[in-house]
Length: 56
Image (tube, rainbow, N blue to C red; front, top):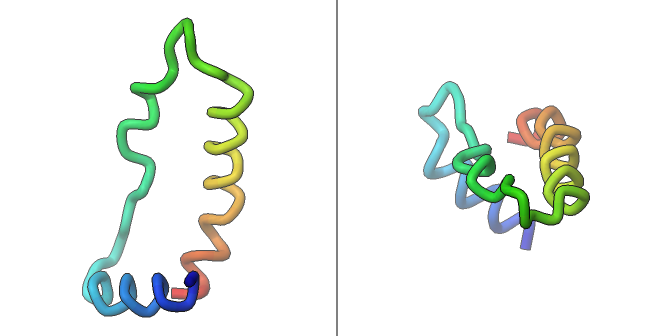
């Protein structure tokens, strides 16, 4: 599945210099939010950004 996603995104985004996926994450951060899960998600995304960009 990841391979197919990379191939598709590569075709769609091949002319782009920069792609951002961190959009509107701040809307989930409120008093009732599960901060541990949200911070794990954000930390995970930040940890793989260099791996993903290298693969593309």
